[in-house]
Length: 324
Image (cartoon, helix red, strand yellow):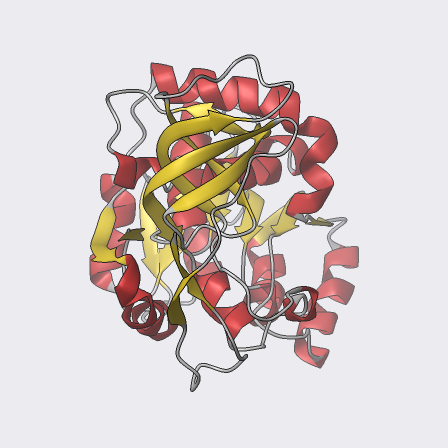
């Protein structure tokens, strides 16, 4: 099969479309003919060697966490999936390839109402959002949630999930167009953080009380202002940082102590104990509610380098999907 692989770290080294051996499904895995692979900003950060876990990747490797397609083989012990079934899920061993492996713990049926491109933006994003809002923050109806990067993959998922939970949502984004997308997806208000201090905006919108929950994927840049935006006793869920926390961010932690605010950190590998219940609920939600997965651009697998340039620039609003 053909697969896009990273041979050297650093964005100056292009990925290469290689001919590689077809994968075989292991026990409790399915083999999927990929019809759409989700390209994520973190894929670029890892390839650039700017992610703390990039050393966990052995060169050459296939990037990408998720895909959607049709089951073409099942491994031993698989009972709930069949050949020909439409599925989406998190991949084992990368998703920028014509065929991908998925653990049955991380796969779900893709309803006919979703395209394959949309399916490539469901499982990882919504599982991350569920972890942040339900497991970590334990957000509830009537609470106000501030979601950073509302026009990004996880942000769009968190925004829509929070609305299904009965929360009021304030989203942040870096352009007016992205703010408009957030409102289209259901945000009660979107703040352009390039034009307005988001903490001041959030306080205004809550009449000085502060938000109950913050979901933040760039805590290195936002943490101090997150503390300003949160109410006493509120919760800040840190999904990640673009770089190491500096003194300014550390000062934010000190200020959180004064407010009795909780800073909750999360990592997807630690989600394993919650997976059975989470995937059952996610499967049910995806069937009951047609979540919007805005597609910014569909590109060919061979165009993955160009896709990474777009992701690195931050100009996209919505998902970038690669089709073999």
